[in-house]
Image 1: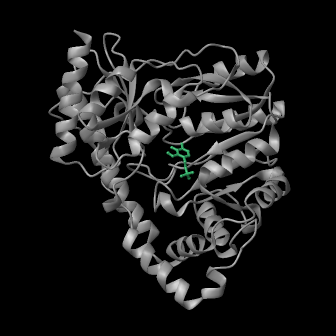
Image 2: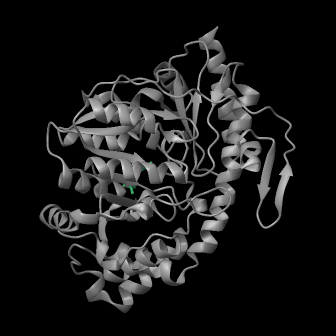
Image 3: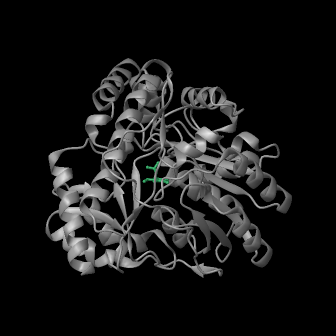
Length: 427
Ligand SMILES: Cc1ncc(COP(=O)(O)O)c(C=O)c1O
């Protein structure tokens, strides 16, 4: 416990299979942002054209990629997956090009269940439905438990893709305060649930996007109990759970679910290849509904990518690959935090993610991140401005920085330039 506190405050660091060491650092840790304070009322979601434009800008090939939360392809096993896909297509041309209707490709479900079991979460292949990414998984889960006009409790800030799902389904959002290290404030959530008729909670429990924070295991257990007692389902997005920077994989709320009230969603977009669009969910007691919704809407997830991912999980060295990328993401997030300290004006704050590859930065002096986004784009640097992470367009003086690419002079230069712009705008 004492070690954990010292580690949290940046005085010591854990080295794998070695122990704790006093941290040597040539730069001072940035202070962390405060717990968030969104409005305590439900709101319709209307992300509008501006967000679509910002997202497109973030995906442009000619910008320094600090916007969209994606990894550099050099970190992903792209060649290996292509080789596997080619081999499978030659070996089983009929299977690879036929429908594999919902609940989806069985060998993939076997592998997902095996990995979940190894991580302490008792799932069987029959509990799992494969999907086109985690995004579809969450949409299906939302539709299984709520309808237009219903309120969904979300983290504030949260991943904009979740806001878009809520928007297209005509649902309403209730933003819940977030602690920069521990995630959802359970005290604030309890108060909100007493006040509002919430139909479901939709939380990213590990290394979330955009804060990079995780719920402590004890909070996960409390959350599961709280929602179970109230009969409110939890849709849990664990897309970054395989990417701790150090130490073991964190648990999921699903691990503590005894009644089928937790609907766990994830995908291989952040670990293997976003373009394969291979995701899954374990929808607990809504399994039948989710399987049918998937069947009625898209019938099946693309077969060949599912086969390739299943093969990679079975024989491709997924654990070995994870060890490599975890180290890389740890390094890249650390370099980005260091660059914030070096180049951004005093008063800048940043989160301290222990996994994943995004960093949330609070700009000093009321600097407007939408304006910073426009300015940066003119110099071919993309960032994700704070308001796209909120149903109420809050966080105007925050940005999310993607740390998914191998650190380079180009990225260092872009961080320096961003820091200068923030300085100019705040002056
Ligand atoms: C928290 C979170 N959930 C879901 C997604 C989308 O995942 P997928 O590509 O599996 O649909 C992302 C992508 O950035 C994300 O950050």
